[in-house]
Image (tube, rainbow, N blue to C red; front, side, top):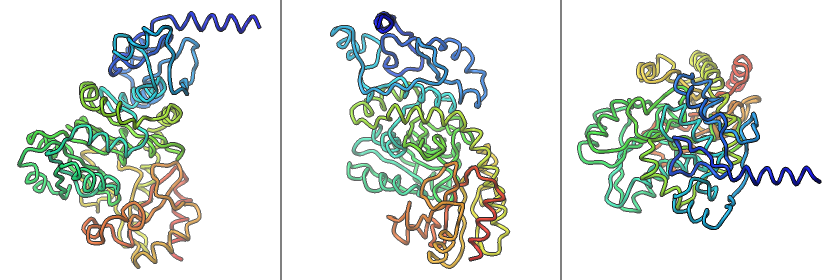
Length: 436
């Protein structure tokens, strides 16, 4: 067992070496004693000129002293200290190092740094789910008496936070038709704390002019939060259009294979340190190291998947638009979409989501969904597998009928998340189901 003793001595000595602090690390909580990111200097020197597909593979990769090729998984809840004084110094921020994985973890940090690079942002903060990201981005920056203006076309749980939870704390929330700049101008004619919007919106794929709304919001003193989950950083960069914060459900396209839950908040280093980090630290919506590791691997193929899915979605949208059993197809890539010109200007692709109406109400929608053989019935999206859902009875079932009608969420509307299957197979499956 001599080798075991030597290994133990090596690890003990290595643990005494000072780590180098990553320049994008929030609050100095990115390294523990012994963390030696051998490739950090090379990564930082090249990241400014690497393209997105390269950043998705190499960005934020800090290897340990063991030189592993794949990103290391630090599956630990806590971290050890050589002496009691080290623990005291880390908790008082006098010493760099990790203390507890709710506050920071090396694997989670790699995911955050890589996602920030893809977004062209200073900082990313990982969360346990997409809704944890939405909630934290709102609650961390608001207090009683504040005012929020939001687009009315929202995911059901986002709507709940805005219309049910925030008002409980004395926060005024105003919903507007996100497509109508005049409505935004009116709502933002008085002081406002935050603006929240999704574009494309769930499930009717409404688009919002991010740049125009940001200009109005900033004039009213508001921070702008954009839920970019449908577009991903591959197809839309809200920060470049003026947004202050971007949120993601990493569960969707970032994982891309329906394996793990996760979320992320993208913002500036100052905003994370001063506003967001204290909220995350004390409320604990932390992403697990294992899920962060899965998300890291998902980022490596994000652009390849999203661009392939978007091309397939456009072909399917055109196919369904010609189909005699379909009443309406909603997809930003179709010229029939009322905001197609905005999609061309604002996005680098049209996304993997489309919606279509089949006529005959819920009964026919269910009949068609049940007849599908390849496309699965699921309320998730952004998966490698194509998924279909009925928003009226799933994601948006808590809305009143009149609210759904206002948003165009009819009983015969279905939402299709296009996967990576061959487009011909998907067309055949949809065609046979529509003709049942």
